[in-house]
Length: 323
Image 1 (tube, one colour):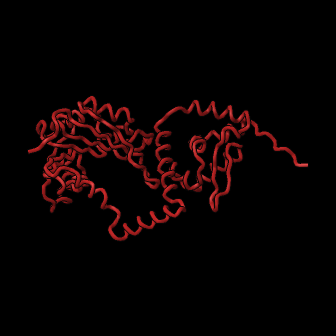
Image 2 (tube, helix red, strand yellow):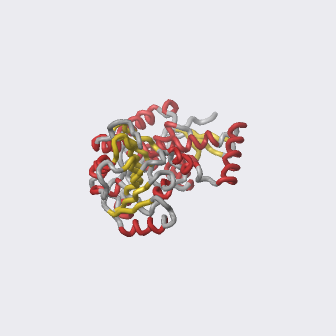
Image 3 (cartoon, one colour):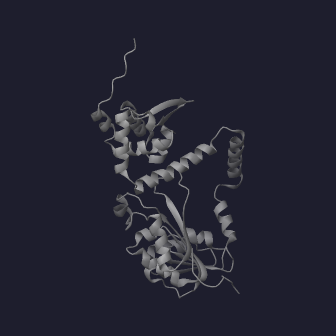
């Protein structure tokens, strides 16, 4: 006669949950059934590390697993947990609450699930994949963004604020009448000038984003890419953006969602660990922009940094007509 499985002591169950990474794992696997590789992409950890944590959770009675071809899929199913484990997990999950780390995990989870759909073995999935590969071989992988910039009105003047080495200015140049590249750092401006030495229609100015060297209502649009988190008072910079943008003009801010990577403060001089969606929107609205929206940018599973957002807004005023 087969002996019934012995119940797992509560101390062992708690021990399995004692590692923060395993708590993140449980939160993910309660939402979706995932493979080791998919979990590794979401958590940005080596597969060997993920496998070790999954084994601890499985041995502790927290996870179900099944074979799917050559992959092993894991899932936390609340209704299938023992009664004591179910109550314990609900209590622990309640204490975890909402956090920047959880939102970051969920954004990466969404990207992983999108990849799963794209990699499906259906006929259309195979055709689409083959076409993407062929198109990349023929034309490269970076033509789409520059092509979309052709939608910008050619008569616009665009300010690239915190231009750094000039990557955004390089994309904009030639698509609009003039790009004004602004940076507080003389070193960065020299690098941008060198990069764009043979590019027409780019003007360089040195100055801080909190006191822009530009006249009121002098540009049709302002872009600010991965800069605000370096500033002590980013709201001062967004007010300056509003000052320089013409009525009906546009602003685009790209930055990081809030995260918990405190080492960035020391390694890269970050003053803010990203921004919440609410604050990203509030900074532009309080500066005077209207029709503000914040969109999460796709999180690449192989990228190592936090997820990004694009915040856009419009300077109130008459319709944006040009002579």
